[in-house]
Length: 78
Image (cartoon, rainbow, N blue to C red):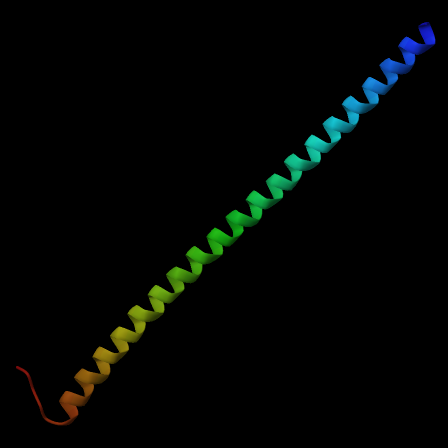
C-alpha cells in the first residue's frame, strides 16, 4: 500500500512539474509575441513619422520651386 501511495505521489508530482513547465513556456511565448508586437508598433510609428516628414519636405520644396519659378518669370505677387 505504501508503494502504491508513493507511486501516485511521484506521478502527481511529475504531472505537476510538466504542467508548470508547459505554463512557463506558454508565458515565454506570449512575452515574445508581445515584444514582437511592440517592435512592429514602434517601427510603424517611426515609418509614419518619416513619411510625414518626407511629405512636409516635399511640400516645402514644391513651394520653393513655385516661388522660384514666379520670380524667374518676373511675376511678382507683391
